[in-house]
Length: 97
Image (cartoon, rainbow, N blue to C red; front, side, top):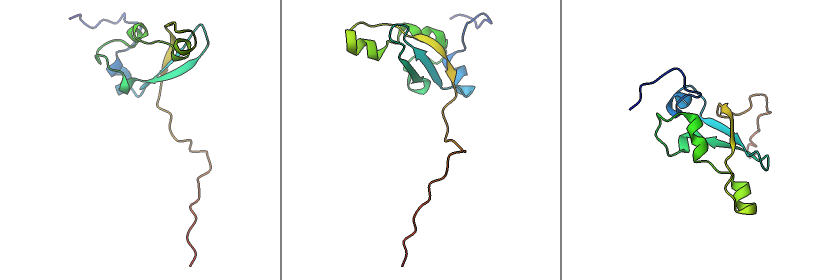
């Protein structure tokens, strides 16, 4: 097992999850399709660096269209989207008697 060094180009999956960045944005260079991958659902060892996931990811849009497996580029880690606090709250209707 390798010792952790400071020259890794990306954090480990576990570090990204613990740091509050569980989403990985990827984009296919061929069709420009952008997708967000939830790292909590990735079945890989948690000590593996995030950049190594490129080897196991494929563009689903290209695979459907041309049946070619193209690897997307990793764009960056993102926090989980939360409910927009500035959005108007939905009002519940109360039953009138």
